[in-house]
Image (cartoon, rainbow, N blue to C red; front, side, top):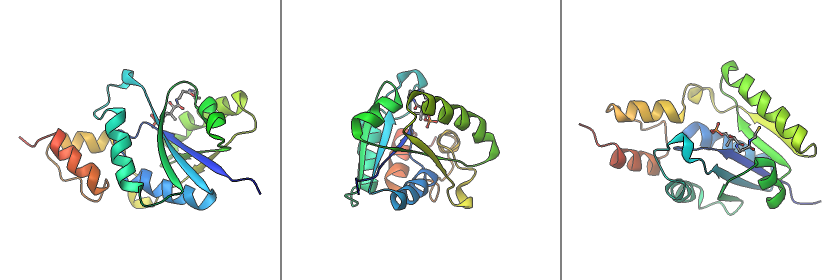
Length: 162
Ligand code: PNS
């Protein structure tokens, strides 16, 4: 049986516990999972790609079946380069669906042999997004339980409470 490789792409600025939960679930579906961080400065990220690579590697480093890479260009090209045949995306609420469906169908058009699978994180994370985590952290809220500890440390260092 050929090895089944899944790609879990995103901005991960920063990785949340919802992302991590989806990653664990993807890990059960594939022999290897590659977390793929999009290089996109247009989004004005809080953390550089290098910082995100470092943080996520720190979090998942114990699992040899998970690797963390950055990519630019088309996701399906990166999937082909890495031998991935599954694209994993997390779905929280119905509001995610429209954008995700468009991306999945476009990716299918570009690369018909690559399948997108949607995974649902635990319901306790259904409201957690990188954007909201940054917003509340910036305003001084405690984000423990919403993000892994290495992310929390870096958020606190980057966004000192006033
Ligand atoms: O976490 P995000 O920002 O919702 O992730 C979006 C991501 C990285 C999956 C998407 O923007 C992407 O795949 N970009 C790469 C460029 C590409 O392939 N675009 C066409 C996808 S339909």
